[in-house]
Length: 167
Length: 164
Image (cartoon, rainbow over all chains, first blue to last red):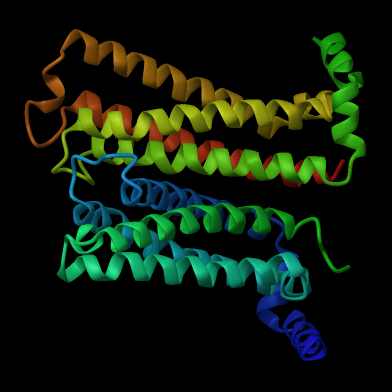
């Protein structure tokens, strides 16, 4: 598996697109700036949604309204993050694809996105879904806490990619 | 100023951050987390002031929901940023992107202070119409641009410091 990924990195590095990125020094920091702004959007949106889910903030607004306001922000930003992330991978494939911090980050991202979908989806058709029973309330609080923790861990893993490089 | 920077550089804890393999990256994680929370939360306020988003919620409610988060995250960003700065104070102080970032932070602060002063003079101005008054939209636009600039400058600090 590792060898396959390494071979893929070696191939990607030599593609014309990757070589273009490597020769333009400003591209990577510029793309990383957009990446960071999208992270800011995700962090703000997920925090306000999860704090509402936990009943800690904005409780005078219905959860379904908060989710309609902020979940589209998360999904849109994630698309931007995947695109800018793909450019960063193309510029330096081995730096991320072979990096344990990157691999952990992608795994946790998957978990955070599943939690976002699981908590947000039922609200579309039944706005009171998460307050309908005590058990559901507890599950919602568990998901909200796990999601907060995962997004913070994803951000830290992202920063650690720079320090766990395979060079 | 130079003496203070040299003193900061030589303190025991600045030295510890410099020498330790994991201290700098972990403080950086806290700093990035704090900055993204500041920008992510303040942009909700800015977009509301611009009349772009969250329009069915009164501005004062949005301010009350969001600003405590922004301030807490800002405190964390300043504290962690100071630790990162201390680890290599003289070089950071010379970095043009750090200087630009601090100037933008100052501008964002002045913009916020003057907006709050304006609101205090006219307590009803914010809720008068569905579309916020020009003064509020201006404050939102300036704030948004300042914070975009702060993030861009912050990213470039990392790149230019690496080269030293």
